[in-house]
Figure (cartoon, rainbow, N blue to C red):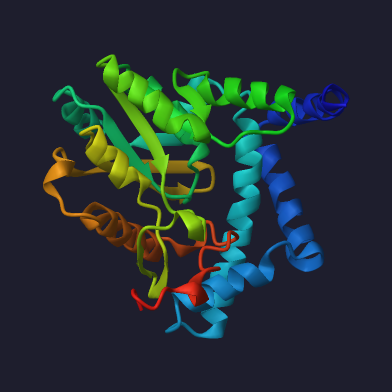
Amino acid sequence: MHLIVFSLIYPFIWLISKLPMKVLYIISDGLYLLNYYIIGYRKEVVLENLKLAFPEKEEEELKKIQKGFLKHLTDFIVESIKTFTISEKEISKRITYKNIDLLKEVAKNGKSISLVGIHQANWEWLTGLPLQIKKPDFYAAYTKVQNKHFEKVIKMSRSKFGGTLYRTSDTIRNLHRNFVNKKQGIYILLSDQSPQIKNTHYWAEFMGVKVPIHTGAETLSKRYDMSFVYWTTRKIKRGYYEVEFELITENPKEYKDYQLTDKFLEITERNIRNQPEVYLWSHKRFKHRDKVPASTS
């Protein structure tokens, strides 16, 4: 059954991905209008999140951000489809790196790097980063896809410019193996998701709301003594992005528990406030806000 579904759907996706970007954005405009005025996918979730994150803003301004985000979301969908067939030349043109030399300089210390970021602008096109810096190797996690045929082509698409992909559940195993073998790597870690309550070790304010916080990037950086670097992606205009790197520390073990996580949150809030319409408001980041343990409230 998986093969039948894949055989019916993937050729259609592949053909769409071969279309020029200007055509894909016409499709995106249609998807946006269909969603905003008819389907309403996550419209209320987005608005609720914005009200929690920006209580000081008027309803009119929040709806403007909501609308901007939903427009960006459909752009992101067609850009992600384009990833299947995008060329080195095009991805290098559409996503530029403001200070790639910083990442190269940090890598000279011989340590692996935790490259932390968030679901903002276009994180999928960061797969083009290995074209800019050849060593050390890049590693990124992906969520397991139930259809093994789709999983195979997604993995090939995201690693075609030189990165290595592994399932999220294999992150520690892969990192530990490389550490034992003294193999330096750059590990791309998206760290703004909402963790499961049972796996929560730390609660903190995010956009003014107390929620459970992922601490995996800090924990792994300390355990394997990795440099801690934040990447920020900004949307310059439709279809064009700029990435900037910010070194937080080359010595994570010098920081007390959760200090690196707090620094991550500080930069994240700054980035969201700078371009709120391109942050992923459709996921329920604040869903556990009413479950704050008494000891942390």
